[in-house]
Length: 519
Image (cartoon, rainbow, N blue to C red):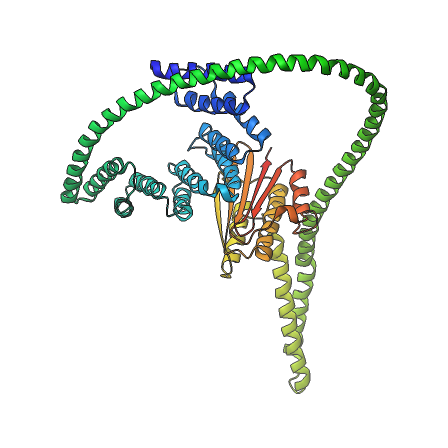
């Protein structure tokens, strides 16, 4: 660890303690997030950065600052970053996406999609490409720097897969973008990548041309960087002196305020003691009322538990009843109809052909029996066509999405991670019913052209995210208890010890996040 890193750490800790004593929460929060980033980037500071991030997040929630919460979720995602097991990191990026539903924060959504693309780049190529494409679609075309960064990152992804021709196409788009700042630095990156890709494709002439451009611009940047470094050191020195002076002035001001506050507190204390004596008599009465309210809450809780138990019993009973009906139709009615068909075949053979009307009647009757027999077989086979009977939850959801998409009214994509094994049967049935109900809501109410169902299973936890690009709605003006079956869905999820979040913006679509623990 170099001395400058240690000095930065010490200065942040000193500033943090001063702001803590001054109760300057905004400045304290800035110190906490900067300490998190500093410690996270070093290996020798012997500190746990998550403690500073937790303090920053707690203040962000207290302040209800959406931008701070967005920074917090992205920092957690970076802390838990693991491309082999991306679930934990992905969970925080999903929360960030919900926050960017707000109009003033939508510009940050493309950055989150870009981070998700990087997260999946190593082990899940299809998901990585999906989020790279979403990044390009969501970027403001006027933000040339972000567009340029995305093309370069997407190029890196194709290079890692040895798809050099596709990488070159992206580099050609990137080369056309001109920005006001750091143009030479970007050109240096682009020329090097052009040279490497052309070399891999066997176009050595082009590779040589770009290697020459790369060498020229690299030498030019080295000279410029030295001059900038000298200027930066001077600016930092002047800034540090100014910050120390401001900090001392703030401390002196705080001392004066503390003296005044102490005097006022003494006067207030005298009045508080008198008030407490009066309130003491009322306190006993309030305690009795609170005890009565607690008893009421206990009774309500018991009723809720009974309601959940009843709902679960109904669901299980319905599935058992459907299966039993199918078995009865197959074993009993099916065999009876088959026997009747044999009897009519014998009648047809032995009957005289002189009675034409009766022969016609026999033919019609035979046709009806054949039809009934086929219907019985199809009903019997339906006992195994339930949500999960043969292939499981994931296959059932993909089949549902494919069937809905085939109608060309709405396209539904299914993105999955970690669902390699079957879950318990009743749990799969319950989850499928929830996804089915939410998908039905999108079809009925959203007027959406596209929707995505994300399913991730990691660390004994199932995460479900359902998004659409429909017309959205104002959550504050919708009675979720009575509309769209949301109340029933929330009750089912609560019975599974899960959590349910819903976010929607008019004209921007809706997002639903569900987390269900799996024992």
